[in-house]
Structure formats: structure tokens, C-alpha cells
Picture (cartoon, rainbow, N blue to C red):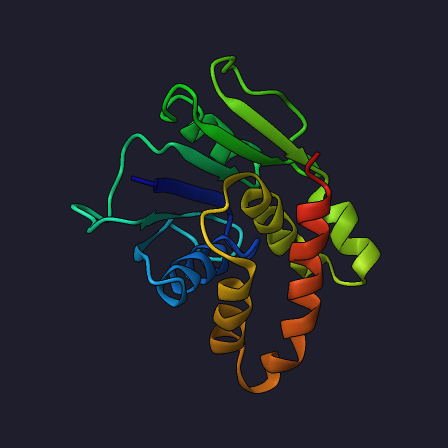
Length: 179
């Protein structure tokens, strides 16, 4: 059985909720069982935000996990808050553009991605979240790139529809950044 218990965390405005929504929606397109549960700090933009995403081949017992096996970390407060919770042998994807310190954990796999720099090269800093998502997908294969593309088309509508291709490019660049 394949089960991904992910917490994606960062400042409000860094797009961690969109990471979760895209993963959960892509999981549905991939015919997997998925849940997405957002959690906001006291302030929205600028405050801390995180979401829990479960993607599984089997029915999901709970949308909540206190011990994820995967973390996406977009800022230092999120690293401090969640690094102790991740399971041994888990995976942590860190945006090193913002997180300039190492984790205290030596029993997990760590992927470091200079997501802001990659996003800047693409011309839009706001896609740093998709760069990190791409690195996560390359390492885990939690959902398919095809599922993610469909999820982006479903989530980015109206005036945001013009950003679908940029987001896909950011994901692809994030995937390439993982060796």
C-alpha cells in the first residue's frame, strides 16, 4: 500500500494551500483516495499556514496526522514546528531560498530546493510553491504529472487560467532540480 501523509507549511501567501489542493485534486484524477485539510495561523497573509494532505491507494481512516511521513517546508517557523513530528525514514522538502538552517533530524531524507531563485528565472516569484511541489513529486511519485496538470486547469480558472502553463513549467523545473 502506498500512503503519503504530507504536511505542507509556510507563511500565508506562499501558496501552501494551493500545493495541498493541487495534490489532493490530482490524486482524485489519478483514482486515488485523497483528503486535504487546511490550517491557518492567527493572520492569513504573513501568518503561518499549513495543510495536511493524504494520498492513498486505500480508503483513508483520518484526514489528520500528527506524524506525517512527508513535509514540504517553506519557512523557518514551519521547520521548527514540524521537524520533530515527521516519521523516521520520512522525506522533507525544504525551500532553501527562505530556510537558511539545517534540520535537527538525521534519520530522514532531505531535498533542498532554491525555489525562489528558480521561480525568479521563470519570471514570477509566486510560483516558488510549484517549484517545491515539482521536487516533491519527482521524489515521491505521489500523483502523476498528468493529474497535476488537470488539477491546475481545474483550480486556476478565470483570470488565473493564464497562469496554468507557468505553473506547469515551475513544477517541471522543480522536478529537474532533484538529482
